[in-house]
Image (cartoon, rainbow, N blue to C red; front, side, top):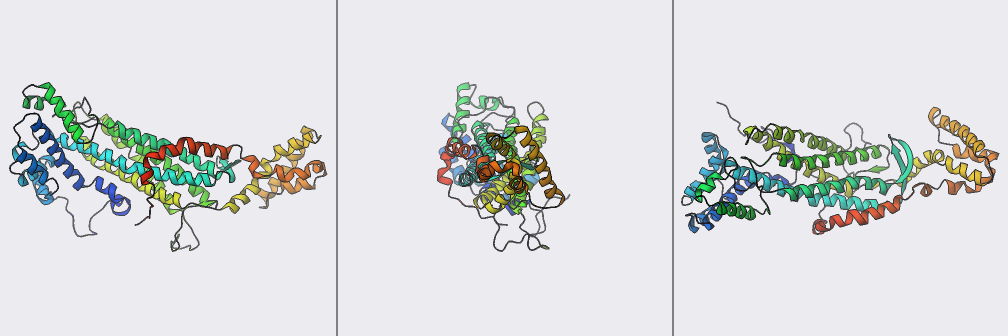
Amino acid sequence: MSRCVHGPKGNHYRSPLVSRYASKEMAYNFSDRKKFTTWRKLWIYLAKAEKALGLPITDAQTLEMESHAEDIDFAMAAEEERKLRHDVMAHVHTFAHCCPTAAPIIHLGATSCYVGDNTDLIMLRDGFNILLPKLARVIDRLANFAESYADLPTLGFTHYQPAQLTTVGKRACLWLQDLVMDMRNLQRARDDLRFRGVKGTTGTQASFLQLFQGDHDKVEELDRMVTEMAGFKKAYLVTGQTYSRKVDIDCLSTLASLGATVHKICTDIRLLANLKEIEEPFEKEQIGSSAMPYKRNPMRAERCCSLARHLVALMADPLQTASVQWLERTLDDSANRRISLPESFLTADIILSTLQNITEGLVVYPKVIERHIRQELPFMATENIIMAMVKAGGNRQDCHEKIRVLSQEAAAVVKQEGGDNDLLARVQRDPYFTPILGQLDNLLDPKTFIGRAPQQVLRFLSEEVRPLLEPYKAKMDVKIELEL
């Protein structure tokens, strides 16, 4: 019978999420080392609580377990699992092998999901705790960027066609607003997590009620004690064999929503890079294309978009898993969750690290932005010109017709001849507009077209963004250097 084996380095597939992209802390969070040491800690919590509540467990047994919590014989565990076809019992046997005194009471009264599900909940909680400071740093960098460019006029786009002016900082606040929503969603999802606790095979706690000879109070206290030892404030009062798989939906939906946000932001950056208005950082020796040496491709933003699509797509897994769990549970959730839960957090971790690197080095080209404004602003200023002529004694309808004709002529030069927008020059040459020629510079000042954008930026940052970052101030100084 064939089985999966790891050959020499380079001969087997490794997920690029870990080998190429993810941070060390997130990779460790879903590692075998973290998983199986957590299993052992959970067995220790259970034994200590059972002992405290009167079961015949000795200090020697719990001390022996604690002294071997970290020294896992992975080779032995793998061999045990090959024989038993059961990962939890393989690790029970492996732990018992190095704790002979404690062997009789390891996993006492518990089911596999006591260690499996509770460990997953710990990993989810810790995963959020890794992501939140990273998201806070992205928001902080982007907030600084928005503040710096709060009053720099730029063309707005609707339907990706030139529209009324906005500012570079105000556009960044549109990105920030989505990220702020993601921050609140991630915090809520983390804070809503509860512990599965000590529930037994079908969630009824029958085995523990038997251990404590029908004492319901002791069973409830056991659940409370283990929950507290694991660092949770509450446990789910009702479970089947597993905690509800809708918890996974809740967690991964917040990450998928973050993926949608990042995809939108990085798509915008890619579009602006094409216009040469804004670029992501570009290293001195970075190569944009193997064939075209002049190119400065937005590879970081493209990476974020690529991975964000994967993050959004992973949302389908917990939805389908939750919908097909039969009665108290079925095991067809297991293999899927081994992939979808870690991959969602690893992918979110990668895109936040990459986005932080982007936002720390965004480059703005004001002269290019100004040129694009000059190409479109005369059309946008026509209403202002009409109003000025009316104030100077002109007829609104006559002026409108004059502007319409001149605008069409200027548009033909732009679209058919490839020339610059010469509407302003046409207005200046037409004697009809002589009464307002001295006002044209003021009428065409880009800063008169941005409305309250600068004020909106400053208020938004002070009222909604900066307060949200306060809990993460101590972790703001970490910089990201992307490595492959």
